[in-house]
Length: 166
Image (cartoon, rainbow, N blue to C red; front, side):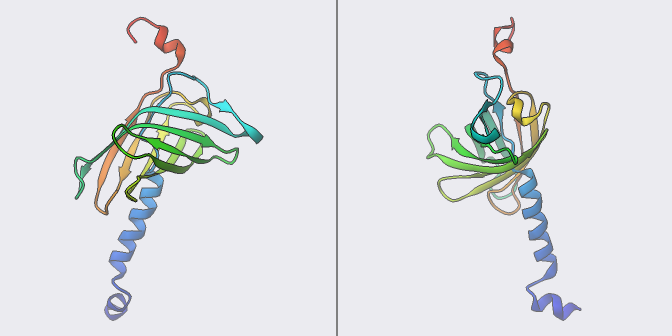
């Protein structure tokens, strides 16, 4: 059995890689604060919706890229199936892309940067993704193996902005 592990390149390393990729795909989402200027996602063609995530931030806290952060906004298109595609906009960086999946209050996102690096996130939302508002948090991994961090975001509706103290 030891020779099979060595011949296959090390099953422990392969399992760890599969676990990291699986966890990363689950983790991918959510570096976000939802748009204060919309409150609700806009309904598009065939039940699809659009949502702008503002003030998104994700920080790598452990690993080779410790201190790396994503910060900016994401323009998301949410298909009726829950599939997500969109663009990532960060100040002073080239635009990137976003893909993922949302199901109610659960979200998974992959942020692909212009330099071909990727950050994977997952998260839980206070409200359904189609409301495009509310607190969202979760872990992130990447861009390199061993990088682990977190993201946080708070959605604000137009009503929140008008309240004193907000």
